[in-house]
Amino acid sequence: MANSARAPHALTSPRFIGPATALGRKRWLANANTAPAAQPANSAARGALRPTTKSSGEKAANPSTAGAPGSTASAAIEPVAAARIEADVLRSSPPRAACLKWRSSQARTGPTLTPPPGEDDMSRILHIEDDAANRLLVRKLLTAAGHEVVDATDGLEGVRLACASTPDLVLVDLNIPGLNGFEVTLRLRGEPPLRGVPIVAITAEGDRDTSLAVGCTGFIQKPIEARSFASLIGRYLRGAREMPSSADLEERMLREQSQRIVGHLEEKIAELMGANARLRELGAARTEFYRNISHELATPLTPVVGYIKLLIDEDLGPLTKGQNKALVAMDGCVKRLRAILDNLLDVTGLETGRMRFAHRDYDFLDTTRRAIAAVADRIDERKQTLVEDLARGPLPAHGDPERLQRAMIHLLENASKFTPTGGTIGVRVSKTPSGYELCVADSGPGIPSNKLERIFEPFYQVDGSVTREHGGVGVGLAIARRTSRGLGGDVRVASPASEVIERATLRGAAFYLAVARRAPEELEG
Image 1 (cartoon, rainbow, N blue to C red):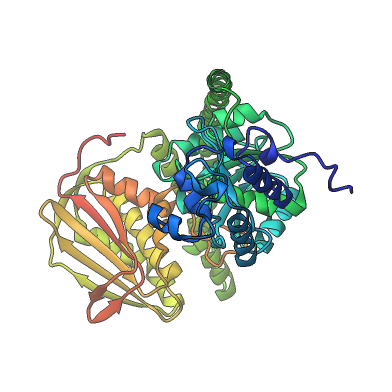
Image 2 (cartoon, rainbow, N blue to C red):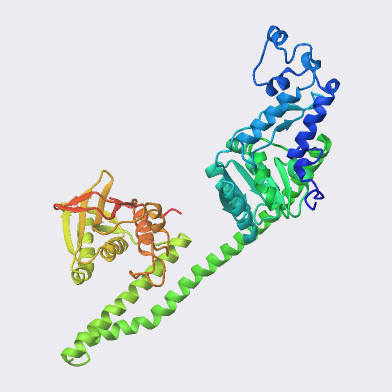
């Protein structure tokens, strides 16, 4: 008794097409059989109910129809045929799909009965909802009905998933973060592959006519009816569609919603402009901080470097073997600190576009050998093998050899850092039509393809966690590329590599640093 008093769902309202319950269908069939004058001359409707289509001659020969009241074009549906059809439908379809699909049109005065479809195939349903409890409930109900459910927690993610996977139906809450449900619907309707996909608004707050005006196929009010929810979604999947109350109302609702969207867009643009301005201010402050901290650290470091050199050279007195060993270790740490400060100064110039070069004549091959000598101890410590294929010199050029040497050291140190102990590093110097090229390849694990370009961003590291295996601050490759461009060339990377240097096959990463024979006088950008 409680179920008989329940308010009808949206799909059983006068705006929806046809009766939705078995009792309603039986009553309609009974009325159709007792009111022949109300039926239109619709041969398609009668043909849908008869097991076979017969000609007028066959009808005359059939004793069950000849002379009967239902034998003319305007006759009512035969009770026996109608009962047989409904029984066949109920036997062939499970309770969820055991319904006759009714459709009405303004061009016709009476309902048209069409055969029910078979069992729905498993459908992919995209559910855009920010509330976890609602997502879980919908997933359980639809999964139990045999559908696949994909969840999105906001409007932007929902649009991305819909465009990427083209679901069979989209369920969208109207009040979601990012793009709201109205905006999501308008956005999806603008995608050609999604124009025919049913979009159903499911919300506790929202207007039915506005939802339909912006392109929704249907509207479901929360809280949902758990028992009939899957069946309701199945109807939308089979082509059911709700219509706005009137065309004028639809136009007015669409216009009002468009105005709200424009206002929302203006607010977002203002927020983005403000955030962008703050980011520029933070970027300028960061650059200034680099410059100041480099200067503040370099000032006290200068006398430390000087006194350590005096002590190692024994200008201040003789040293024991232990003292000399300790001072050499300190000298290595101070040089490393000095290199980090130089890198920070280079990054400052890189970000401000004011990286300075001191051009003069130099030899590219000699610069390469000095860079190799600078990292030789590190390579030996890691028991790595260095193979060289150097072009015959001299290789005269005009540029900044000090900056070029530091760029080469960055590439060599990077190769040693990511090559396992006992691995191989290869160096090749070759001539190019416009200048020279240094290739540094290794037998390490290589670089993921989706990070090949990001590794040249300042401070970016493939593994940026505090527990990462490799040290460094992530500026070496950025400085190397900027230096190379300032000398008329560039730095590119290939991973996995396919280099063979002195019979050593190197399939890790390979970096190629190129410079012009004569560097430009000014660095652009």
